[in-house]
Image (cartoon, rainbow, N blue to C red; front, side, top):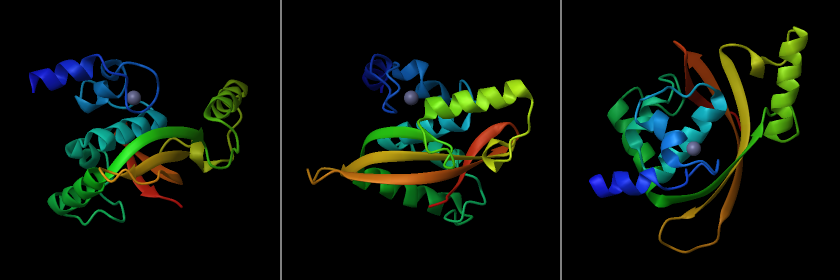
Length: 170
Ligand SMILES: [Zn+2]
């Protein structure tokens, strides 16, 4: 375990942020901090899938997630199966699904709205719900098969200050 921790400390974060793992998703995986934004949680969950951190994935899934069976152990096994058979190659966060633009531009627009004090009509910017569109590059682990590219929208809900993955929207 010690050697694994050492190699994690000097590796780039699997989420593709370009930061070192401990300064990025590693903080959330260890519980040192809670992911402060839906994007941070999306990135941390992608990294957790890539590193097969099943406990983190179960802990950050909303208990009312449609695929959550209500039995954490059964749900953990299904998450583990996905993580085990899939090699997660890359994540690209595209931003709010109604904004067909890169995350950086979406963030700028959202900041501009906050500055102007105008209420956004989009539910994705409310306090308790958030929607993020992203693409994931993946392939089946160990088979060397072709890469797949999946585009998804995730729905996050904030519960007691923590952003939890609620469901896939599409
Ligand atoms: Zn990261």
